[in-house]
Amino acid sequence: MGYYSQRISQAAITLVAGAFVTFSVYRLMPGGPLEAIRRQLVRQMVRRTGSVDRELIAQRTQMLTGINPDTPIPIAFYEYTRDIVLYQDFGQSIAYNQPVFDVLFQAMPWSIFLSSYGLIIGYTATIVIGAVMAWYEGSKVDFGLTGFVLTMNSIPYYVVAIVMLVVLGFQYHIFPTGGRYAGHVVPGFNVPFMISVARHAAMPIISTAVVGFAAGSLQLRGNAIRVIGSDFIRSAEIRGIGTNRILTRYLTRNAILPTYTSMMVGISTLFSSSVIVERIFQYVGVGWYMFEALQLQDYPLMMGSFLFFATITTLAILFADLTYGLIDPRAGTGASRENF
Image (cartoon, rainbow, N blue to C red; front, side, top):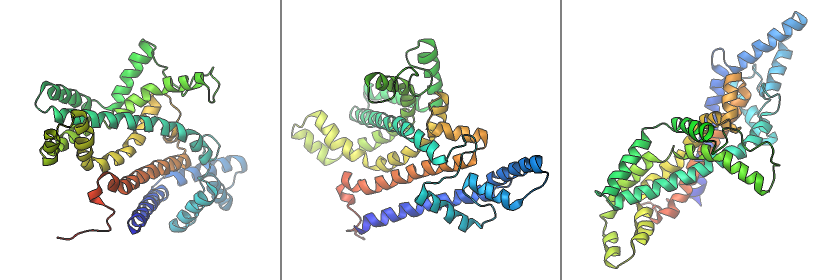
């Protein structure tokens, strides 16, 4: 129990520390977001009234961002996080004139949908191909798959996304070129809507899966080759256990251990890559809004998007910490640590 509470405490401290650093940069950056918003409000007030009411400007800035520019950073950070925890108040989006929470809450399920399926497909391919390459080490299968993986590893995921968009979208019209679903379907639990969602998400999911695919296969291949030389693998072969069972139950389960944490951390890569992927496919998710916030200088929305990605990353690492003992019983829970 102490192990889990320690890991959860570390994750909470990491998340708060990351948010505080970002919040401080948000405040201290020369010509930064708060200063830009305040200058914009001053110009608007001068045009309307010919004078400047600094107290009113500070109140208006706080209403837009949830931050009073005259408040010291530690106190302002406390007030900002308090409003988020108690009232889900992330400030007001300047570009969309809506609460940041409402904007991100509507987009969040779509980003999680894309990244989750990209994660499952990408890492399933990573494990299967890595194990097959190791099992057939030195054969034509190993040679061919290694060449394929190295080729895929050298192509950036956004290039794959653009090529798919041009070929499968614009040239052959196999998949839609943008949006989350067709405009003529009725959103809800019905077949036409689900088919439309699947067709619109196909290309973003495939291009997202490429992110964690190639390099992970090579890493898992190296781990698996080391495991193949173990006595328990030879023992399994001598006992006549089938190849499929050795691959899934003995080889893959042990070879995946060194890469498990990096795979969990890779979740953050998938979500961060969604900023570009969602933009390319005009898929309105959190990444799409974050890109829009950068272009429109909508800093409250940008800060809220950052917290979304930071929370996902922290939770992924925490999940890896809490489940590592389930995959590798030797790791235990840290309660029976031995010193040599």
